[in-house]
Image (cartoon, rainbow, N blue to C red):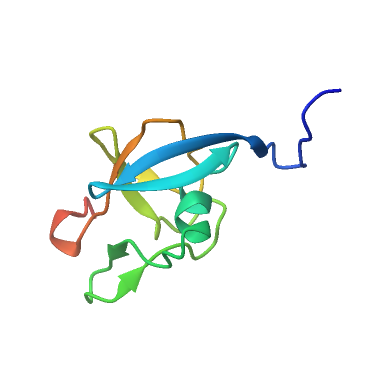
Length: 99
């Protein structure tokens, strides 16, 4: 019998591990990076122009509040990018933002 899938394509039977600012974080296949971060209890991972913490706001990639660096690529929308086993994620602070 095939492994269960949900509508978002998450596979709870296929674990993955990413590294966020040097710390290992567990997730499951099909989760976005934002999903992995939220499931691990992280609500913010960037700061905006005022220095206020930012995380997921819209969840559909329109607002750019959830930007992170993934495998050396800056300004990746965490809500749109599916996590892959072994990804290295770095949070971004206001001084590093492209905007």
